[in-house]
Length: 135
Image (cartoon, rainbow, N blue to C red; front, side):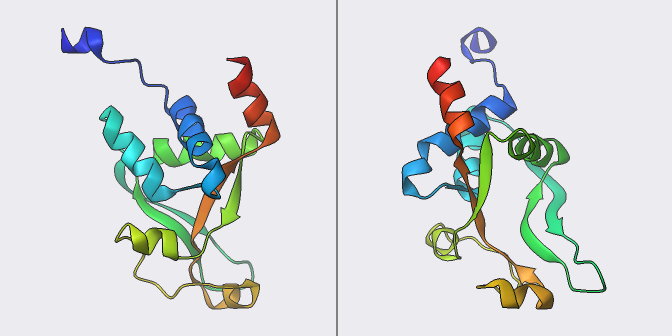
């Protein structure tokens, strides 16, 4: 009976809906998406990281870590399809949730070369908005 009552979970669509819900707050953070995953019982935990590897020997820039490959790939597909966009959020939304990465925080473009954690969120694009309205 529980399987019958549980709604079908489409990872990309649920990410899109979650990001849309937080759009007016400047976008959804990774912790917002994790709460959404928990709500649906989706096990996003893993050993993957979303990292920008600098060319020319610069240090890596981490966006988030601790998800499985499937979850990161679904989010990357939404960005590649132009349905959502990345946005710098600063660390405060993450600290409010009691989360963050144990790396130096990158606050501006000048800090990227030194590597560390670049706290980002995701916002819906006009294309993503139109798709949700049509559904």
